[in-house]
Amino acid sequence: MELLIALFVLIGVFVVMIAVGLGISYVVGKALYEREHPKPDAGDTDPCAQCHADREWYQAMPGGKQIAVTAWWWVNRMTWAQKGCR
Image (cartoon, rainbow, N blue to C red; front, top):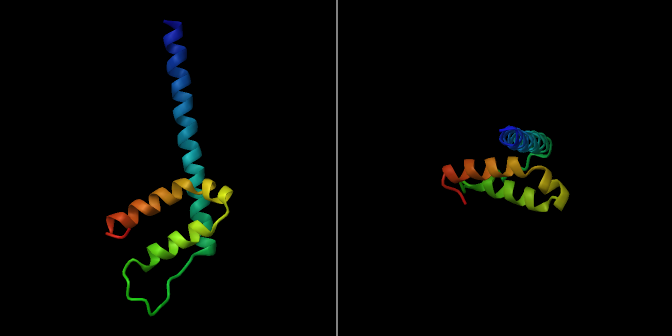
């Protein structure tokens, strides 16, 4: 019984740590995005221009920065996918 309780505690701590890590990643990504905010050309008529600008901004980042903002990137991609952009 004690082993089962210890196992549940370990799993709970693991899940909480992952949630905290993803939350920090999202906040860092949002802060970096708002500071560097890539904007598409004003004359561009493509409704997904901002999506493409976001992708270019993300891909231009160094690898360490990309890893740090992974949670923000997932949320951003899902938001644009719901709007029909790829």
